Amino acid sequence: MELALKNPIIFFDLETTGTNILRDRIVEISYIKVMPSGNETERTLHINPGMPIPAEATAIHHITDDDVKNAPPFKQVAQE
Image (spheres, one colour):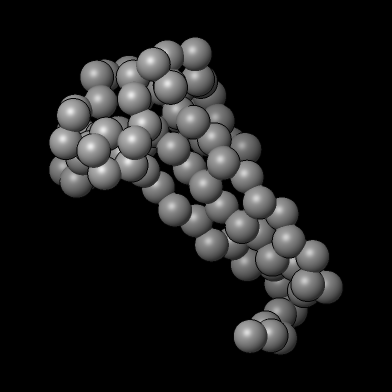
């Protein structure tokens, strides 16, 4: 599919500690940025949620506490 873009568009995906928007936290952000020229930029960032990742969440996205222990917290990458 070809997109006729005038401005860049970003598609993103989040992996989290759960589905409760008040309690749960992001553990991974992935995105693809598509430019009007057709060039694409992809990036995946692990995020330290500051809380243990429940086994039920790890069973879905396969991200463990050990995977994010040295990752930055969300507030550190939010402006990016």
